[in-house]
Amino acid sequence: MPTTADKPMADVPDTVCQPKHPLHALTTFELRDYRRQLESAIAFFGRQEHIPPVRADLQAALDEVIAEQDDRKGWPVPDPGRPPDVSALTSGELERTHRELQAALALARSGSPIQVPILAHVAAIDAELARRVGQQT
Image (tube, rainbow, N blue to C red; front, side, top):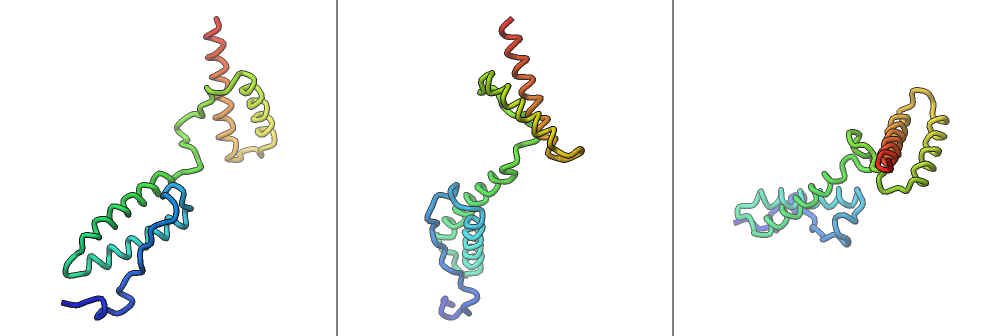
């Protein structure tokens, strides 16, 4: 039965170190590096004649890393299909934000992609203000 001493060093994975922080607190690069360590170790154990039980723990950790990476996809860009939620803002905050967005829109170049989220926020604010006026009557 071959041992790790019989294997060339290139086949032996580096030690998979537990991250110093929870997954959600890791930077994108730390998360990527941790994933690579896990994948390397899992691949190494997959080539062994007898797969040790620790491989299942490594796979579970890898699944958590992949889930965390999937959660981060698209961040910080919001979902374009979902309108901004401005319902928690006061009327004064809505009006001030509306003025600031109108100023930003005036400074944006014609046809600039930045106009899309600005207009979406303006529309959301207009709809919220209209909803509040409708509730008062």
